[in-house]
Every structure is written in structure tokens, then in C-alpha cells.
Image 1 (tube, rainbow, N blue to C red):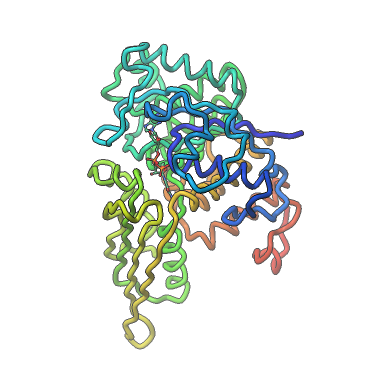
Image 2 (image 1 turned 30 degrees about the vertical axis):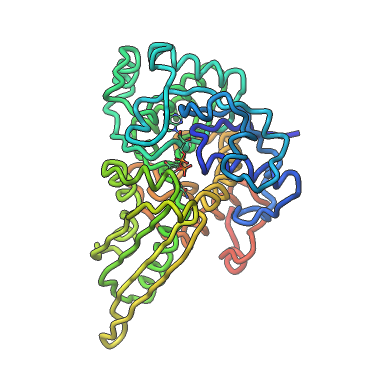
Length: 403
Ligand code: NAD
């Protein structure tokens, strides 16, 4: 039986929703709505996904099974027994939860040097053999690396002040790839990894993949599609306002200006990339209100000039469950990542990133609307024989694909 071993990094709302949703699909208790290619006969089925490890730094999660963590987030749902098979282990911290109401401790804080902490993570993965790692820790801002050597030296010397947790996890993944097998690291958070040439080169040298950055799940892809709609009709956009207010821990974390800037960067790139000019815009997570929980409130206003100078406005208001929106997409990123590894792809893959990520790597890549990105991705999947035929509503229904 084919299988994809998946290691989770950051057992928060999204990672828990992902594991829970996949196991409920396997049990037949839910339909795979929200998984874009669920009906596309991909070579790996959703049932092939097996979660084999989990890392976190929150003391209230470490040592608990995924079933216990899932019950904290979803007390009213039936939790599949299979989630009892994985226990949350301690990861590295590097101050990533600073300022949050989380009692966090990483391996490097008291128990081991940073280098030893990395070795322990690699050992866990040697035992649990991930093909794909899904990076879902608290939003953090990460600069680009100047060289791989520099990262190696900093880890050796335990330079925790100048390193981010994202960089250290990626480094551990590359050590694992050297000793065990190539791995795909999916960076679903706004840290700069797939847009960092040093990171992409490191993955490539180990026949591995880095996909990212920052999962595109909610209002930003919808805004990008609306902008594409206007651009294709040569309607001139005067300005874009888009904000989100939510009540989960991720929104709480985004109250920190540094983290908010990281999100703003990955969200805002769409305007100029899609329109070709930089219309004034305000696109960022704007607030935390606890009673909203995971179901965020999104509001959007786009003003534009139409034919004969007419001024129009699009106004969209929505309530969107934040974590399931990303978790459903990740089901397909995991399956595509494994298919790509099997075919010898290395470094990063723009076709995957462009559809699933807010800021697609590699560095310098454009954000394109999801309507266009979907067709680019379907074309790539067909060329690589990951799907046997175009899914419904694909452009390939009308234009034959040349393999
Ligand atoms: P969350 O706060 O519920 O979960 C984050 C988890 O990571 C927590 O359990 C926390 O303890 C853990 N963590 C923090 N630092 C860690 C470290 N150094 N090592 C291991 N674990 C660590 O957040 P979430 O809603 O699950 O979102 C996770 C990430 O996904 C965020 O970075 C967010 O920006 C990104 N993201 C989310 C969405 C979405 O929810 N729709 C969309 C795009 C991107």
C-alpha cells in the first residue's frame, strides 16, 4: 500500500484540523469538501496520508496524543482512535512564542545545546520516517540567509538570538534528508524559506523540496481572483481595503507588530503582481476579538473605474473558518509534494506554490490570481501524469494539453 509519512511541526489549530480531518475522511465520517483535488484521481489518495510525528513547545500539548489535542480544539466531535498513535514531542523554541500566553519550552532551553536539540529532532524523524514535513508554528518573521555555512556555524555555536525556529527546523530537515531520504518541507507560515535562494539551493543539493511561503487560504486568494477579474476587463482599480478580525491564537499572535509585518508582506504582494501597477491598498490582519474564535470576520472593498469613467465598488463581507480553510489545501500540497519527490523534483516548484501559497517561491516569483494559478497547476499535474485527465472546469476541457 502506498503511503505518505507526514511529520507535523507546530500542533496548533491548523495542524490539528488537518490531522483530524484526514482521519475523519479515512473513517468515512465526512466528505472531502475543501480539498481542491479530492475528485481528481491523484496518484496518492487522501487515505495514503499517515501522520507519524508531531513537534510543539507548548507544555500543555507535549506528551499528549493527537487525539487528546484534537479533543481540546474540537470537544464536540468524535475523535478517531488512529489519532492516539502519535504523541506530541518537544521541539526547538528559539523564542517563537514570545509575548503569547503559552507556557513554552524548547529542547535547547535547559535540556540540550542547540546542536544536540537538532540531533534529537533528526533522531525522531529517523524513527518516524517522514516523506513530508508540514511547518505550522506560530507566525514568525524570518530574514534571508547569507549562506548555508553561516546557518551551520550559528547552530553549532548555539546563536539562538539570530536564528528563527523556522530556519532551525529546516536545517534539521536537511540533516535528515542527508542521512535518511529526500524530504519535502511545506512552509505554510509567512517565514521566508521558499523565497530564500540559500534555502532552495540547500533543498536542491539534497534532492529535497521546500514549498511555500504562507498558505493562501482565506481572503487573500479571493481578493486576487477579484483583481484578476477586473484586470482582464481593464477596469482601473483605485484602491483595495481588506481586513480580517479573528479570535484564535494566530490572530492573537498577530497583535505583535513584527509578526503582523510578516503577514502583511505575504498578503500585499498580490496587488502589483496582478494589476501591474500598485493601487493604494490596506491588506492585513487587523484585529483580535476572542468571541469570534476560529471563524474570522473578513471585509473587503475594491473601488475601480469602469467604461466612460463610471466609478464602481465591490464590497464583500464573510465569516470564514480559518483553520479548516488552510488544512483542506494542505491535504493536496502533501500529496503533490510526495508525487514531485518521486519524480525527482528538487528545490522548489512554482506551479504548486502559485496556487497554494500567498508568497510563492522561488525569490522574484509573481503572485498570480488563483484562477490562473489553478490552470497552471493542472497543466503541470497532467504533464507529470499525477492526474490522468483534467478535473472538471479545467481549461483543458476546451484546449487540448500538449504533453
Ligand atoms: P496556532 O497558534 O493555533 O498554532 C501554532 C502552534 O505552533 C502552537 O501549538 C504553538 O505552541 C506551536 N509553536 C510555536 N512555536 C513553536 C516552535 N518553535 N516549535 C514547535 N511548535 C511551535 O496557529 P494556527 O492557526 O494553527 O496557524 C499556524 C500557522 O499557519 C501560523 O504561522 C499562520 O500564520 C499560518 N497560516 C494559517 C492560516 C489559517 O489559519 N487559515 C493561513 C495561512 C497561514
